[in-house]
Image (tube, rainbow over the protein chains, first blue to last red):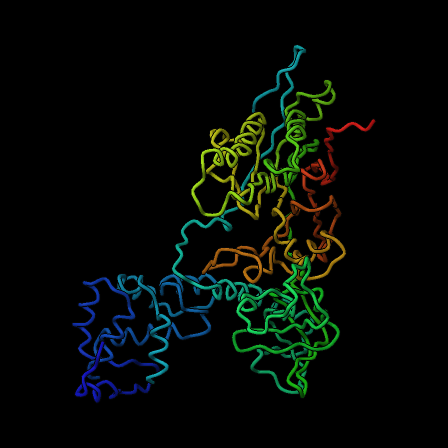
Length: 130
Length: 428
């Protein structure tokens, strides 16, 4: 996707969250809606959002934040190539005490959770921008 | 079970035993391949083994602190637990094909890739450290083994190993022997039907013997005590030239399917429980035998219980791979090492292929078997291995049938072993 010069400021203006890893957010609701209806994968989601202006903190954002922290936590093992739910279940089975509320969250948000957790493209994006 | 017809009035009945398959962990059932890499299986392996080793370390050296690789301090004695990686100079690497410094000497295929310069490295999630000292011999260990090491970091950044702790034999459940009578299990491996070295008559002799068509009453009485047959791999040898990805001509198709069909027909005569460990055979080929509930396709490795005796084994790839990357006296010594490392195939997935499981490492040995067999070996060998907590394991190295004409017979009552040889050549 090409960015016009007027978008560049918006592209780099990021709000850093004190609580940890974040990604640039935008009119997330509409992007999410778009992604769900297209059935496309989470890398597209990130690409869509990163071109918007950082702003809203809404319900989804908080959850996504927690999810990403879960993905990045090395104690639960590698995160690439498996769904979040599967990774949570593995952590549970190996006795690693993953956060309990998560299971409910992941099962409620089934479409996204099944698609997969942070992908390699995502990781690149996050490491570059933060 | 079918009885055997003989000429006298009385019918000999074959003995029976209770069979229970324990292969669930080896089966790829609900797994879907999502493009995952092997880091998942290594994580599962390290986590399970480390939890176990941490509990053993408290009895081994209770006063030495345990730390991770990143937490090493120079000169401070401590214990670290991680996965071993062996750096091998001669190990074939795909990048060698693209190397600009191609040597004039063509790459020779070694049967063993060891070199005096090989060294070991210990790795966990936090990092890796090169291992020094003489306690840990690179010729014994291979990549993928998880151990606990006692030592200290040197000025050069190496970890000088003072002592090593392996997991040791797993706990063993007492076999609940239901009967005191002799019951036999026959192990066959490397029939290689279809290869130039195989002799169909030899296999036919074996089948005739097991089904009681040979010998007198006494012979048949002995044979009636065979309750199970295990076919440990390499039952069929497909000529390599046929499998080059192109469509087969009809003439070639019969060359491919004939040996399998022959094997199929022969095996239908055997009215016995058969565990067959051949990936080529599984489900696609042995049409006739699939109808019989006595024929069972199994996984490789295969684990099952007969009358409470736990039997675990493979068709030999795990030991053959160890032979290429480490040194040992004989096949039985490698088998002993895998039991002590509590891992059937530590070189997977590094040099031996396996499925990239995400939630577990199925090759970890959680319960010590009573019998441990390995197929397709060069020669027959067997001995009893004793564990530190009273475990007793019968190790069996099954030779290739096409080369030796030998099968191994195990008595479930006392775990004693002997061989049966089938010869079709008569020396004059």
